[in-house]
Image (cartoon, rainbow, N blue to C red; front, top):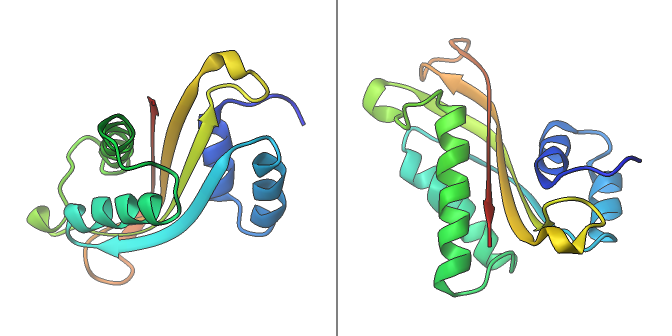
Length: 145
């Protein structure tokens, strides 16, 4: 495999269904910390809280300002892309059902000098809260720690 950036790693893991375990183990051997989960709500705050809780519970971030702040901004950046610029769901009668991936490690694979970063990718369905009235969306946020 060629060297990849943390964003591409997070995107691959979010989009892959069949070989996620194989990819995750490969990148974990390269010292990346990875978590993949799911969230859904008409309330953007609940999605942010689900991702923050998972990151904390899975030890992707420590309890300090710099790490929590970097994660928060990566989530907001990803949510902004996922919601296409307007981080609103229920307020405009939209709902989201998504898979999220959090990846922490070097910015560039096998390059420790690139520093410590965190990437969040959101991929799933967004749209009217009626089945069949949704479509795919994706968003990504990357922040230095």
